[in-house]
Length: 432
Image (cartoon, rainbow, N blue to C red):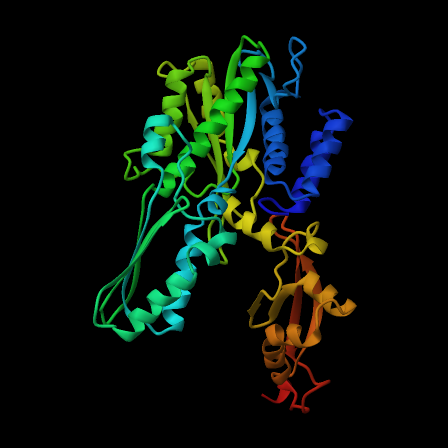
């Protein structure tokens, strides 16, 4: 799938069906088949909280049309009961509205293509005054990606590049300040390749606004139910790069501040729970789900005990995550629609030891059905298998090895000692 494997999610769907209505499970199935990360988190969290107590999904209160995700009560004594809604926060839309990365990449390509070695800098303006005085959404003053050619990389910019090429020993500046675009690109002579940028608004500020908006939106939905008990909001990482960063940005803010300020203002919200994936790179990676809880100054003692118990068992409560949200988002973005309902495989991955080779079982099946061209398969695997063949070793067993509920298995080829079926006869050991 994306964050969690499809095998894992199907298992959770089966388990959740014991306490969810048929239409609720059907909705989860349909949304998972569309690749929705927010539904992955919802399915997982419903499963987790049901292990800790009793969960009612989308309860109705006072004829309210708002469907809140979780009404939880502890299993035996009911000392802990709360209503909580789940929201998944991502950077989706931020890049589209503020395509600074695309701009920087395009500028770098042009500089390299024209061999314009030098000190390049750019400054991008932003609606700083409007943000502080009118509480507008922070926005960089760049055009949409579709208007880059007409408003940035146009004839005037081409002339600027020509001037730089013709007089590389002189400093040159190109400025745009019209149609809501505020941009300055500067060239200075240098023997080094450098490109640096200054943004009018720190990128973390854009993320902070997204987190804040999500909190207030969920708050309004919870209050419309008229529920009078404890209430909470669960924020899940859907590809929000700065969600779990704890250090302060240039504006003196960090994610902790955003959440704590919200709780200070909305004292009828008892907690905010943040959930994300710690993704590790490498063969020995041990990905895990992590969480952090925020509460008001006087944290309810029963909730404190509850979350302490929950956090001490995170690895048992949460399933193994294959990817974190940022990687999962890119995986879904670049996955062909025909393979949207296939989980990620080990592909050309391979492990080997003196008597063993492990390769993707799905790759073998794709090879046998013609889905994977033979030349591509051989490019990844031929040399290792050839080394065993040169040592006159034959396959003596083939087994399937599963790992962490991932959406692929290892096909394990075990090789024996040099075999007389493919090697010269030798003197029997009895004469040694």
